[in-house]
Image (cartoon, rainbow, N blue to C red):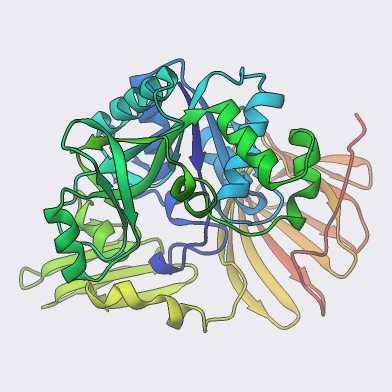
Length: 438
């Protein structure tokens, strides 16, 4: 099975744990049998491999998410990198061209496209495989997954099939309705459109060439920032007459808000927290080292992390985005391919960060023109390279880096540093990367 996982968007509806870099699919909130936690991304990826160990998985994503994906899944993951965000049609066209021109997947093979962040069981992934097999038959140009609705949702578009068979031709599509209209659609046998579908590679490549003037993947990548923003539904799905839908009646949840996310959490508390017996339907997620106590609360979510603290009625938590948009500050936590960083403090001319590097990992060899840095090692050991000079580093060592110096750090064991940045223009854009000569 060839599968494209769409990973995009920011994480403002799950603030403060998510941000522009750390979207909801990267939050490690789901407990595994060994007591550790995994993210939605890890959960989906591992489930696909359980159902089909030979599945070829490609993740379509933006540059800002690549480090987090590598951190959670490893560096050998196939990634179709979107140079900028252009909605789902350009992203899917680019990923399809990537499969054909880079991964050398034949154009007559089928591919499944689905979001990376639904909360589902293994029967969903079996259904994805069946969707791929149905597309491979060639009876239709597009085969959609239609999710049997559990309530008259206003968040999803609806697919109305021609009949009630497991696989049916599509009669028509309906946009996101109000609740009363949605109930009418459901009475007609309508299914939720969850953005899951399958097609043969040649079909989408042909559609892409009709809309975009490009030669191959490499040419499309170079032209990507000039493309128009357009959804796959609008550009392709709603204009296709040779289209089928397959029913799916298993568990499927879009965990896009704190309200829906906490419904699927096995534990009431993650992190340092206590609640008394008078609390009911309360969830606490605490990523800080500060103990938290809740008493006599009902229907509340409490979430604390480096970016802030949320205390909200669960129903009201769905409406936090416009308020979060007003909060202006640097990204306070991010996972990188080499580990993670957490901002401890910042002022107009300084920033203090705790950096954790995984064993055997290293930062890019880079420099900054507008700031000095001081590194204090607090755990582990490794080595630093500053302007070509290599030296060991261990807990208690201090490294001073002047603006313009090329530098990196390489961890032998897990290595933790406190980094102090000093300058009048501290910015993530103030970075030049160099090749490290061996």
